[in-house]
Length: 387
Image (cartoon, rainbow, N blue to C red; front, top):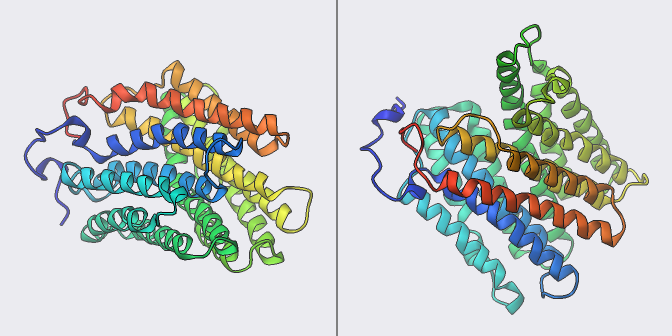
């Protein structure tokens, strides 16, 4: 039987940052995003010896997986009524992630990164998986499967020779993370929206998704991952991407998106999710030979879906798990706007000056997030509860 949260152990007496693993990992994601993107912009301009492979890898296996780890360390104890991720577990996971970044930073010197970079995801999947399996939390077994698949793709990237298979592994990992966002987002976005609209006095309509659409979304996205690995830029990959775009877009029809415009903590979730069907639509058109560049589709999913949804979830979870009201500050809303603007400009801007501006906007948004949430994530909860 799951152990109630209140009975997991004695009250935490150690450092605040180790009171719950989401603290360290949300800060890691928020601080690493602007640093890694600034490094890439400098490399793009010829000032640092970093490749586009490094940029892609660190967006996915540096920034995105740190945020995923932060979310899971906050969410899994609630899903399973099990122990908090704190103390040694939180510290070891953060340390493994940091070692991976050190390993990747050494790659320009010809030092292999894999001994350090491949530590983090198996540890995360193992600890998360054990808690989920102990609680027999079957609906989240697929979360563990996605984490292990991401580790397999990172393994492929590290051991494949530079070239097509590294690109396939990175692109498939993007779609793997999008699959995870669609899985979790399909649950939380309508739920959070419904609760917020009811509190705002909108009680006449429910936010829901037809069950058949929910059941189709994740398998279709898994097919996108498989087609990206086996038959990229093909008729099959294009058709599958268009079908996934249709299904993920239709899911939003009953989510009452237009009624959330006065609720920043909610509308940002809708914007982040909306980048999924947009990116898949652009990918489908591109793969079928249409007038859309492959990088436009890719950045709709990376800078857009992944970047915006991580910001939305991290800001909400950090407030909720610190005992604060779920009301974002003006600076937080500014961070939302900067990241969304940067993502849109990167997708639809083609001139080098626009690409540079897009990167600066996106990185600045995450720098604002890190500055605003540093005092929230490094101080004890206001309500005196654990975590």
